Image (cartoon, rainbow, N blue to C red; front, side, top):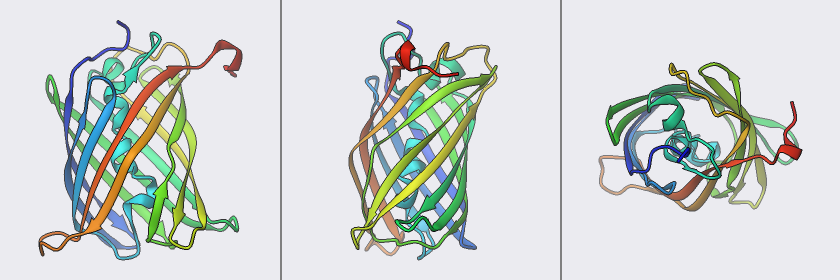
Length: 230
């Protein structure tokens, strides 16, 4: 099978950064099953009051989900082409309904394979955000990924979230992954990220500020040849 790994991968998540000049720090775990279904949790020990993980479309989780995505029709997931070791960057520009930019942030990832089905992901987030923090929902999103050079794939996407006042905000995302194997995705593909559940709530245990959990599915699907553009 060309899809690659057919096992559950456990990823230890460590997140840190600086948003609006305030520290951000979190730890958690992401489980990605062999069929691309993922389940994650994240506990924030530090987070700016002016920021919320949902304003990045919960990308702190999903930036890692291509690792064990369900690869269909002879496509390949990220673990197959990178052997589980890669670096990633993702930039976000967030626009309100009046086309005013309210956020510009960048995240980076260091993914390291610890054993056959255990990895560690260190996510770092920097930037500024001035929009709402009471977020009702986030949309799913698709990324058209292309092989930009040997050992480098990337793509762009759009995602939305809806704030408590029912206003919709657009996330313009651009992402890139680099790795050191000779493998490739062979042709452009779509990475699909579907969220089944995404909850964040304030903690009452006096040890953390915010707890988050997520469930969804990541899939790699081919692009029909008639729709491939150079």
